[in-house]
Length: 445
Image (tube, rainbow, N blue to C red; front, top):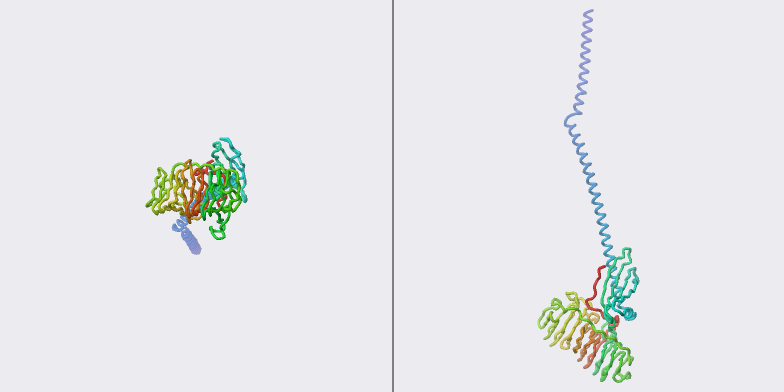
């Protein structure tokens, strides 16, 4: 039994050991599996990946925040740009409305006689707001009399028709009583026309240059006193009016149009001279050309040609004391055609040379006799002599076979030797006021 017991015990012990061994083997297998799942290398990699994911998330959030701020800034900047562009547009429209209003006032002056509304110094008249035709923009003129029977300040506000409107203001001095260039020739005291092929006629630039079928009968002549000489083979192809008398009476066959005697007087006002003289920078240097910017005396002689720009570099009109062309000297106006004024305070004698308005439009060139000088002026015409001349204190003589395309208004006008004035009908749109050169300005509000 004992042996049996020993045997069984031994077998039991062996089973126990076997069981333990099997359990130990399974435990070892599980431990190895766990060790494989928890190897240091694998565990470190997972930890670092988790750290990188948090960093990337933070960077994404930061980038989104910065992008949002930049987007807001761009939206604000775009809004400011749009607002600035809109303000510029409305300001420009307002400026053009003010300019249009000023032009309209000047155009209407002759018919509406605005100067009669303000007769005392310091008196003003408000013409109210007017909407421009075909636009919502509007203008507002106010007139101020500065001196009795003297200059009037015209100030015009302009507003666009938009919600923001904008406001721009321009002003200019005018002298009432000026005469528009509505005649071929006007003499404050007298007009004399004599000699074969001498006289006046007209043309309409809307139908091309002078000549052929474009020769008309609007070469009107007027005088505040007399037309004392109208003889020989001369002819006025147009109407005649004089306050006192006409040589040969209204039945004179040299008059092709109507004749009025006595006629209503024409108020030929004097023209004030702009301040100073033309700067040396406005007058190019050249051989046989002499200009003194201190005295304002200009001489072009010995066949020399002086070219003046339609747009003086200084931005001011040309201003001279004496302007003399001699010995075939030539005065050309060149560049892009636009209106330019030339003021002469004493002597204007281009008879020894030639004046050439390259644009061929007398509306682009006006000579003004300014101030109180009463010296005699001698003119010569030519194929390029397209200009208007206003010199109410000077006696003007046009002689020789030269022609002027435009208009001449002076203290007296004398035509002889086959000279002609071909009146350009486009000059007839004058306003009845004299504009004071250099007085235009934009006013800040």
